Image 1 (cartoon, one colour):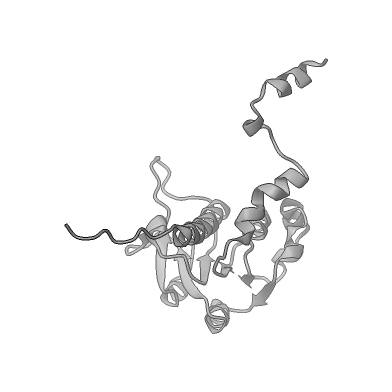
Image 2: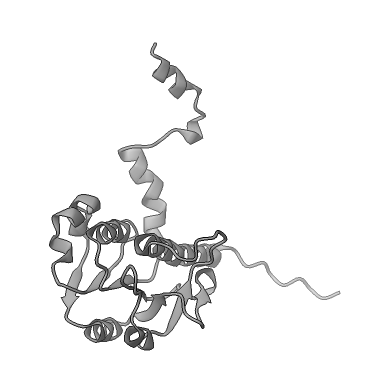
Length: 203
């Protein structure tokens, strides 16, 4: 018996890594839960590595739509595709010449627009109502979401941080935003399933 097989045998069953069919079973229950639509608007995100990471995150969280504002070739970049590992095939996206056009398209499709940005009136992400059809808006790595685009959003949300770094990489922030949106919808669906206790008689 190899040392590696001995280590595997020592791992408690609930901590063993999954693969294949078992991995599909792990996510099956979550996929069956009702959840609102989720979209992303990328305004001038420049790095193919960030875009690739965002695309993979979007595919993992079943993002319904990508509104891409920028050069118009981001999702065809070979570096992006290397990071995304082919997950772009699971997504629906469209390029827009301006953020205004993308905002209009998202609104027309019924999404409420929430910018992930550090603004004076930003609301903590976990205190933001994301349990509805939401389009999260993210911006350029250095400049962020432009003022004109912020003006077209319903509100801005920020991710509270405890360390000495005051901001996150755009791909990391997007991943946290998507996870929080799905968490809220899953939590809401679980709360709806809880039985309601009957009123006790007075006295």
